[in-house]
Length: 428
Ligand code: ACO
Image (cartoon, rainbow, N blue to C red; front, top):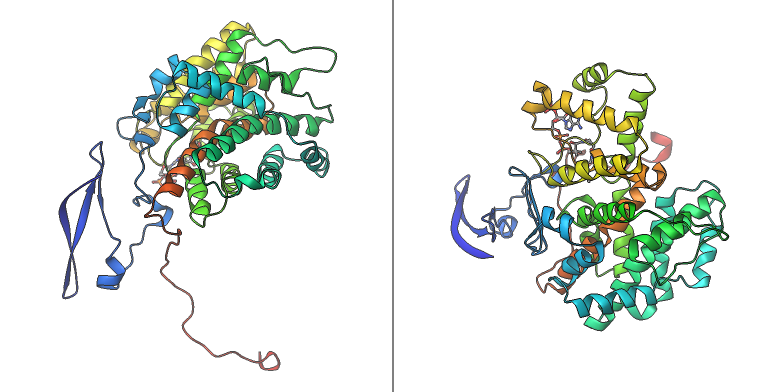
């Protein structure tokens, strides 16, 4: 990042020249690192909407223009031409792999797709119907215990090994958590299948019958994972970086990212979209009356709006097209798709949404794709977590290798009571 000019801050009788940083796409940030030391001041930015927490070379988002690029490559090109594994390698290792590198990495994923049998007992500790997201986070954290040699990563080889284990096993753990929640036997991974096919096999095959997904279903799953693979400093990524800044291990750090992703305003939004569309389908509300409720702020239009995008989320465009194609190819009409299209059209022509720059986000159509793949709603955030794993790993690594990293420790403006004496119990 180039340093250019300074910004001048005046407070009381003091003036401070603050360095200005300019990113490779022209983003400008004022470096306030010395603010407290030199002026005795803090910045106040609830929700960190104006705070650059780090310098990063992984993902670029321009929310005004609706641009998303991983390592410089536009999401539209990756969605059309790449696969999830190739995109994961791009994010984590910084460049598109050669054919040989990709083959070696795929083989590594196959080598590490099984779970230690001891780890399987963890699944028994969860009640019937247990939330797959809780299982995923707990088992990913426990995974580190089974690989103590990777708790302190010292070399590129160790890092690559940890990456292979996480990317491969997150899919196995996710599928097993689903099987466990239904009381079905675990289907072990098949090393002869591609990453996405293997996942669908572990989800839907039964011991006496192999599940045979269509090629379109496999491609749609890969696309879903590609567009979810990273999104710069969002809540779960920032959580991973924050936990990682304490020098916590990679497994613990990404496990905390899974917890952050769980909420309805983040990775839980795709399930909330389906819930909302289902309510409308059931006749509880009409599209117009539902939108009136949204405008009265009685509820939110789930899958709409974004902290950064004030234009179309490019992922929503890609997924809308894919959802259309998949629903059409499957030959099974999904009435929720019709409602989604009507909601989108009506909202986009309404002043409330226009003036607030609220557009469909990645979650608006992703649930339709997952439904067409037969994925149950309580697995939706888990699917997001599988997709986001490469991004979390890339950010953890970037921060871990950055010599300027300090433990994340935001400040506050204290508004509680001033100093007061302790009152003994019998005098209160
Ligand atoms: N429906 C209705 N109104 C909305 C919505 C929405 N989905 N999103 C924002 N608004 C309104 C707010 O009420 C607010 O209106 P006001 O100015 O009259 O008070 C204005 O738009 C600005 O909203 P904020 O809440 O300040 O926006 P913020 O950046 O904090 O929130 C968020 C972003 C959480 C994504 C929000 O748009 C939202 O709740 N969307 C629905 C949930 C969702 O789809 N989440 C997934 C996000 S993408 C992801 O995590 C992968």
